[in-house]
Image 1: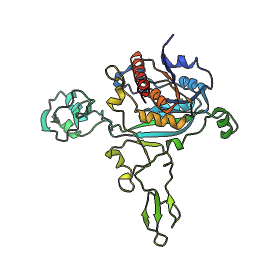
Image 2: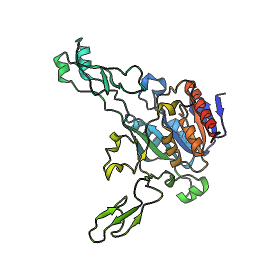
Image 3: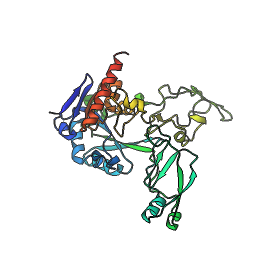
Image 4: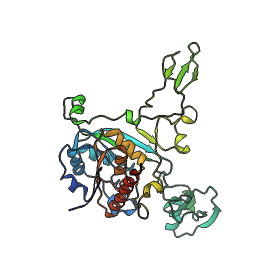
Length: 373
């Protein structure tokens, strides 16, 4: 019997996910939100060697209610194969959601240094780096100011190419800085003759748009346009008939398939009016160390902890009220905590005992905090 952790909101299993899935009833789950392996061999972890198989996604399809949605995180390098497996299992691919952020660390080989090392040439010390951003090695670039990177907060010097071959390829590297993750949005085909009938019977099939609308309280509530000159006189948009004073939608903007953090680097990519150019997008920065490790004995050692605000947004988008969310790769428990905060039930499965124990601690801490609300 697998080790379990049960609360009023759901159950966490320390087990192989497909074995647990095979014990679950058909059409019993309202939504699936999960962050599976990307098959990029992250930090040489064994669990990141393979993508979820078609067989696995077929079991997910079986337990999901007709019209139920799946949101699965995918790496940019393996997104095509990950999504194809979901498609081949029988899901309808509906969209892709891009989560864009600015704090990714370049993990790119310096080709010039690699050439000198291959030729056995010793590089001489160059000038002290003054920007304080990156420490360059033959195997990567690391943010030396990052508080999460122990032992890297020190001064460093550039090294100069020692051979002609290294000089020719100075400044060349092998990868771009990672600043985006993709989520595949898929849906189990409806079982009734139309969406309305499916929604009545199974409560699934749609997206909770109004729950996830994007609001900006700093924008003015009205749009004003001069009748004669057509000049924009104020407000938050140019939408509307000329000469009409139109009230801003109190519900907020229609959610898009782009999620961004609120860093200047990212916001500056989106043109618009003034400094509110990206107000049409949901803001979500990466999880802080405080959020990651709240309630954990020590620190959260999971490598891919997703922020709670992101998981809450995604769960709210695809889960009907009082629904059950399945996360078969629940890791350190972020999806479970998001469900608790949103009022959903959860079923989480994690094969690694270390992460299962961290998830238990985080869930218990969340429930303890709620007792004082």
